[in-house]
Image (cartoon, rainbow over the protein chains, first blue to last red):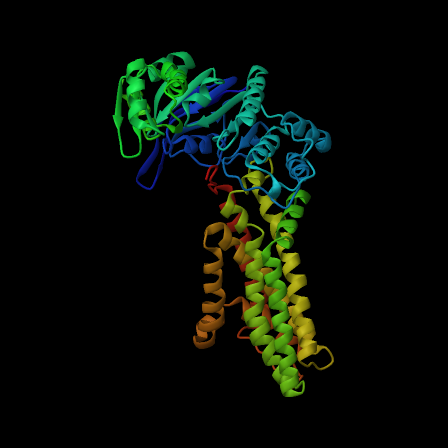
Length: 303
Length: 241
């Protein structure tokens, strides 16, 4: 059981403040670090993984500072977001090299165990350069798990994963969390965090905006109106159908299609396919207005 | 030293495009040496000029630049260095292991290239090959240490390294007397000068004496290694893109 502790941590680059006076304690279980892009999630992870010194404050794992202390890496597994690995090696060779760098007593069997955990045993003899993004992600996981660390730090692990890979990683993280590992992963997508994280730390613009169990934060977030952009074979008819269905509050026509505002987001998402089918309209594109993500968090901070 | 770090370094060095550029540079040196022999009939004063100025003065620093930065700069650039750094391995060990590989490859490759080119261009009893081989071995070690240091200090290691090799060692060292005495090239030539002393045909000259040359090479090499280790201890790596 390990605890990551940040006390009054700030980090600035030149005169840009990336992280501003953050204090948080991350214990065993799965914790989601949620925030829009550029909120300082990577900077926080960088400091927790010993690759950045805090400009002020302290970052410790079980009371020991991580900065300039490579021996800490026996306890830390890090899954970076950057995709680059040693592409000319096979998956197994790369994980094995990581096991050896950790000085494990039996690197070979540790490697096989880690590959099995991420379900990459079958592809272990292929070169990393030939892997898909999801497979690379799993190899990265294997390198982070090979020494059975107490703390696992993952930077945007779900980026670019297909739903099946996502489910698999979710299950793996949950298992690790319930086994008593301290698992922290960052994400800018609320829905990713929802299925998995018991605790959430929300950061916005370098500050800690909210912290606590998922459900209360979720409620804060979903009570806010949601924006969607749609395009379809008949935008006007769809607009009429959506309004008469009553699952959305406002619909406006745009040159590209429709902008829809729905306060009950679950209801709208489930109603939309039915509405379109009943009106015999083909949906071409349904996009949650992504820029509104910032506003989700801004909304949270404002509360 | 860590065997895994060394093997990874060797693998990425030999597997990279840099390896082919190195082979190409070596081929270029042999071609120039062959042309020189064809043009001069293998006169040793001509071949000495070709080997010391073109081979040793220009190609060796460039080869060492490719090798010395090659064991670390690409990994820093693409972020894969985290897999080495996020390990309970002292940063000193990582630096020394990578440097050992780079130095061994540079010495073997550069010395072989210079000695073979010497024989192609024209030599007397292997004297040119031996003396310039020694100078190349010494220079390679120092160059690799310096270029490795540049690679951990700046993301623009190739440009900075080329500027140093071409501008400082190549151009300035040709005009400015003070600069000439402060260059790896001149220091490494000092023992070569000693070796061919008394042989009037092979004119290798250094700006500095033997002791100065050796001491300066040692200071620059060790200094670069120390700076590299200190720098890698505090290297901020992008964990994300």
